[in-house]
Image (cartoon, rainbow, N blue to C red; front, side):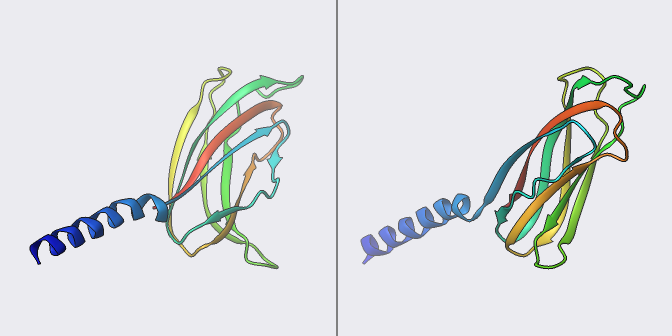
Length: 140
């Protein structure tokens, strides 16, 4: 009887340890911005949980007529809900002027239900600075 109970305990413990990574959800995305908006509407399927949005943004080049300062980049997360998509949260990043030097960000977006999310990256104007970025959407 002790042997069966011991084996059962080990099996339950192993299942719980392995279930954590299986239940967690993390999606990676990347983007390139040469004007002022990136909205490719790529959908990322997320599980329910507390959403964390993290990543980094960097400048890659400038175009003729670039502004003296780099404008703030906004990274907004939306949930696709049909006719009108729902805004979940947004992060703002001030990119560095030095090319290919990343500025990191982390944003706790709160609890979400499962479903498809997408990212919209934008600036208030085309400042003629070109940026790239990458990030992760994570629900534990």
